[in-house]
Image 1: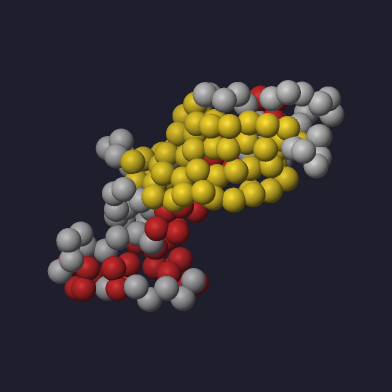
Image 2: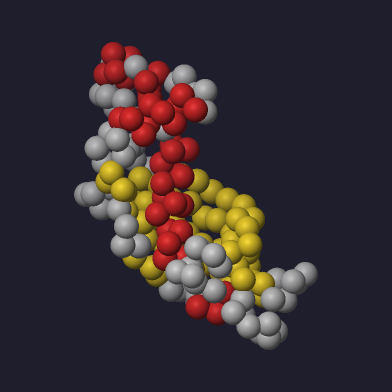
Length: 155
């Protein structure tokens, strides 16, 4: 498995994920159709051209999905039990069709699960950045990771 186990992650660690993903107009249109989101900022170029953005912007939930998805192969593939929650999701800058998203992950907190000592809870901060290095998504999530060993640790 390519994901990291609980023991592989330490507070303060930063991971620069190697994948990047360019978001297309089709990605945004299909996502909005599938989720029944009719927001004209995402779908109506005429409307969006008259807003502060000047053109359509990518749906923020789609952006969040790409930010989390980009991390999977190098972080959680096969080594997590579940996402436990998201404490904050911020979109400091808009994402436009044709922007490429890259992600950096920081390990914020870490502890052994109180109810399942063969697992550990880790809080991660993901910074999604566009091709210019601007932060376009900042999210903190808590993840239940598998441990490689069943030893009780004080982490």
